[in-house]
Structures are given as C-alpha cells and as structure tokens.
Image (tube, rainbow, N blue to C red; front, side, top):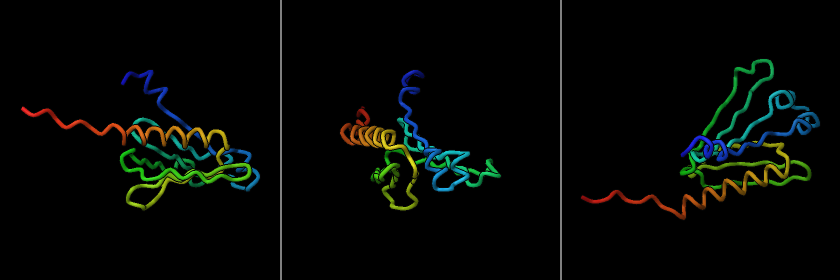
Amino acid sequence: MTQSTAANDRIEVRSSRWWALLTGKLTRLLFPACLIADHVGVSTKLVEFWLAPWRRTDEHMPLAHIAEVAHARGLIWDSISVESSGGLNPLVVTGLPKGQARHFVEQVRERLNEAVATPPRPPARR
C-alpha cells in the first residue's frame, strides 16, 4: 500500500467540545476523545485526567476481531461502540457530532463487509 493511499485510508472522529462543555466534562473539553479507523483496525485515544494528560488509554481492535459497530443516535450527539468477537471491553466514544459519527460507522461497516466478502486466498500448493 502506498503512503498516499494509507493517508486517505484513515478515518478519524473526535468528541464534541460543545458536548463536553454542556455536560461538564473538563477532561473531554481539553482533550477530546478520538476514534480512529484504518485498514488495520479501530483505535481509541482517551486522556484519563485533565491534570495528567500523559495518563491516557490507547486501545486497538483489529478488523478481524470486530463483531459489531453500534451507533447510538441521540438528539444532538451520538455514541459509537465497537464490540469485539469475544464480547469483552468494547471501544466506546460518546459525544460525537452526528454527521461525522454516521460517516465513521458507514466506512467501518463497509470495510468489514469487504473483509468478509474477499476471504484470504490459500497458499499455492507445490
């Protein structure tokens, strides 16, 4: 994969600072939660406490392990939950702008469908 294709392959959505302000989440106001999808999988970047930004949680889930991408629609902001096939520890980000969340979910589901539709080819026999 070329570098330009890899750059276009990345989809990123961040939680809304307005959502953080209106819900009183100071850490999310200063450091919005980030949900990233690329050709490898889905990742999150969450800062745990605003006073210690070096304490953050980076989680990654490969595309092969994703069972469901749940999109919870709210009145103003949405939430996305990426669940693994094992069922433990889903990647959840809340307070996402509606349009960006919808686009993110569509793209990830499209990639999952492509991965299922084109199974890996078995190695050639000699």
